[in-house]
Image (tube, rainbow over all chains, first blue to last red; front, side):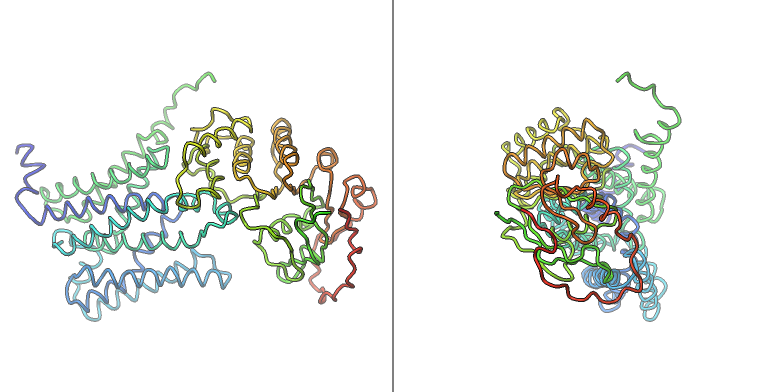
Length: 290
Length: 255
């Protein structure tokens, strides 16, 4: 098998592989940077919980549209995700529950409701599709939606970059200068949910945050500055998407999980070999003179 | 007698228990005031109330200032010290009043930020990540940001806690420089020697205002004893506070 057969032919020969690749690259560009900010805000698990919270909305959208309509599922997921974020925010301010506790309660409720809705009307195949995605079935309109979400994400991030950094780094300072921190926080949550919706069809609701969190963790292991981290996260996610698709094609594996596993392998490599990784810990270099 | 910031019978509570109790008086424009008192005396609470982070349960504050006139260094700033941001970018946040959330930092702001870093003794540190700084160096960075903020009123909440003598001296020089420029500086301090040596005016607080005026008069043995006598605990069985007799001289306001 030549290098062409191995690396390029799958995409040259099949339209569905090309669309899957473009979708992956779009997701990488949007989700990578979002993941870095999620991680820096210590909201990694919150992002994961959020991806479960969107399930009932996605399920209703799925049942109403009758098929895997990304638009219908996306709107449903957006409504469900934002409701859970908003409700848990209100509960944590109004009661003694911390935000993580109220968030956990709401997302579990939401997840249970979602599975119930799907099992009520759909088949097990439907449930599997909603949970794990069908990246190879992405059509033109779905691709347009994913591309739009990525564009909106990048423009929005560029616009609110400074207040978002200030809100992550020193929220107290942002308050004293009258910068509306909660507004940027809410806007950021909206971007998170939007990018999850974009990942639905590719990776399913269970792994929608996969291309956010794993590349972000890799980026934090290698990068020193925020710019470097954001770039690294996007590049890692893109490589995972491409390698994952090629591997799943040749080895006849499910595409979504293979993409996430590729990211996981890069993560494992980074844990060992990054400057702050395990190998450096075990075999430290001699210290400097001054 | 130019009152910049007046406290009028100010009471701030946590769960209805007063942390600052019926405090009246004013900070003169251009004054340099230390707020002293035992732990739990309501010093930080008063700072937060001035910054508008806590709402008074009773009484009020009067001033003609806007938010951007204030520069505030909280005691336990919830700053993420591991955030991947450079020293220069941290200081540049101080230009917020000019740039806002979206404006660009031009060469002018950058040059100014570099100057303030040199002024706090951190010349050459511009590109270092803040995670690599010591506690003292980081406090210098926060002072550089305050310098760039160019605020009329500067509130410092225990700015020299866990800071070594040399850094404290350098930062005290900056405080004196602000005072010389006619800015109003209010600092919560624990070190009474420091208060005596560097702060012309003092507000001695023990929930209630024990004394407020020239440091030498306020820091009398009698007043300090009175401040120490303050009960540390809340009185769980405390009844409702009766309205005080309105009398401005009650709190010994001297300007």
